[in-house]
Length: 114
Image (cartoon, rainbow, N blue to C red):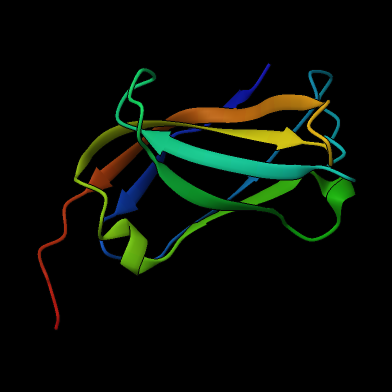
């Protein structure tokens, strides 16, 4: 079962978050040989979404996944509530597991520079 964590993203700024993934017994999830993928959507049924860069942070045995969205990309996301999840895949996608999920609240940006 995926870990549920909610995040807040400020529109037009750098979004970075690190999540520690654990197994059901509380041990760290081994990310060796796995690639994380992340998307956020307005709802579970929305066909289009926004990609969030997901990468294994440091030693894969530590179970850490870093999520990142650059300011140029978060600027394109309308303020509001979004759902997201993170899946990890092996090289040929014969193993796919959802490890993280939740809500991302995007706060609107006021300052806009040229």
